[in-house]
Figure (spheres, rainbow, N blue to C red):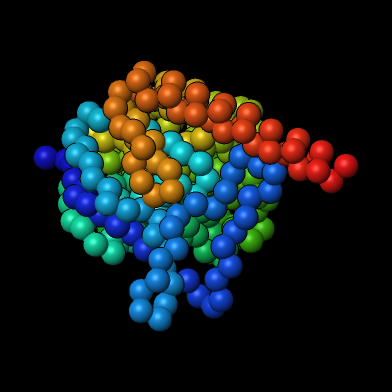
Length: 266
């Protein structure tokens, strides 16, 4: 049965070179988070600490928090890009991770060739790729440009093809890092409907986003992270209001700090 089970996972990165702790300027509501800890002679950034969750079929989970709170790192661990430094992770199910829709494309190859390359990367056979190839080309709207190298594409054409490829596989587990908006207004509407369809087809959806309105509309559960640790987990209607209140309080505190700095300088 499709699931994501994480038990006390911690994710750490080595700090290369000399480390200088980042500072937050007055009036800024974003700060690089995560604890820097010493291990022997080296420093590591502890991006996520002692995280546990049980996600089963039907779960629609939003992960919220400030920049650097560990949201994207957690998605990459679920996707198998990173391994936990400690703890246990068990992921069962076909994964579609829309973390970087352009990942794996080759600029010297044609659009059509890139369809096959991305399909092979997902473990599909040539026959399976041939079945979805016409749908990808039609959705991208590239027409005859599909047989030209990607290096000749505009950035918008590249994004349309990458999105069309990335969303052409029905996943059991869908991982989204922010809600994707690509192309012009007409294509964005197509993309929105495509994502909506993927959400309905997927067994588990995990969405990281700063947009609380999108999280509220898509997710039934929310995990609030701060400095790599879980602050709160529960139903969307319980967690989001508390998170928004915290953000408002944070902004007021920072505004007062900025005013104090200005008065002192004056």
